[in-house]
Length: 392
Image (tube, rainbow, N blue to C red; front, side, top):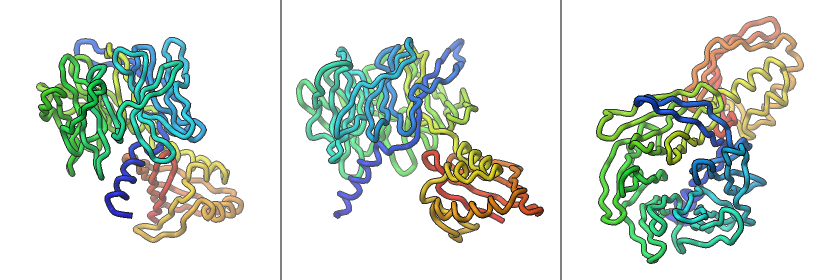
């Protein structure tokens, strides 16, 4: 396969990688410039992939959600505390739903099982879907008005920024190599997008009519998603923290809230309603959760619960790079006999450090009357432990 085609296919499939994420709805109160974050409610509450929230209005949150092996568009109604399904497309999945201005319809990216990826319009209740942009492989989009949208389009091994007029059937490229986060800038006739280079992402403004653009600010390290509050403040998530930046006033991003609950460990997508009093965000659980689960099962000598947090192809190493074995079944053979023959087995956690997807445990293990000291380094991906390295 030619290199460009291979990279293009890899990029396309990676746009909607199926991670174990949840969508949370959070009250936000701003008094005297101080932001108070309320209790987060998990509104997706669904195993697997839940992502890309947006507000249809102040009562309904749209998002993509996995069911029966495909991803459909769901809606959460606040006053009913109820999740309903909006799409159910045989042979295809939908992502990144947005309300179409001045219409009772939504737009969403449709990815068919044969790899065809296009932007469609869907009715909120009954009716037929309609393709909006033929021949454009749209990854992400934002509506400027009811006819004009700005979208990130897959071109070769990157995404380019395209302004498309649905009514006039025109489109033009305004910037090359961009990210996924697109928003209307409050109290302006501008949209914002992210440019990307080897150093990270920068937020830029764009006038879709004149095509003029300029830098607003750099995003923090490791961050590519953000949103705008109605007063023009930028909000972003970094790990389990919420950050803010006021263009023209702030010198750097600053933290205004940190979540301590384990199910909000790594924040990605984030959006706000029109009133600015509700946040919807996407988060993965803290890497600590599967590590703690296997520790408790280890002490209970419960082999099934011990293995559950591990990936099927987990790799086990001795420091620094000696591979001991690969796979959950090999782990089962090794630990089953050990659990049966060691009635006094107990691991005491002395210290734990969490750095993004890595958990470093300092442990004291009692086994057959002897005490051993070790350090275990766990790597977690999509809620499963994929690698363990023991330092003895």
